[in-house]
Length: 137
Image: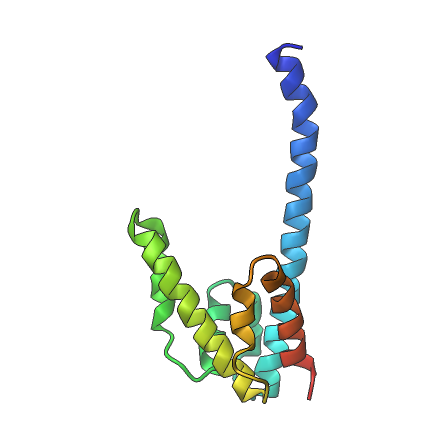
């Protein structure tokens, strides 16, 4: 089997895989937007529609958490070599703080977002946690 035959055999598998990843990503994004919008409405935060707009949804999270918005500027650091690693860690810390505050505003335990740091289980917990924060009393 030469390289062209190998490439033509792998290409459909790669296209299928990337399509599935894109579909799952879109479904998760829509879910988080719906839950963030529900949380914004329940907390009386203005402009809950911002949950649907990338970057603006982070501003909305900071508003719900009653925290500063400036950590969003750390996203610029993602494009700077060597700085991106530190910017990523600091940004994740601020996201956890915002989520902690959002959980407390909704009357849930603030430590729930910390469980998202557990490999594999953390992603599933994040989905469950946002559903509980958005739709439970």
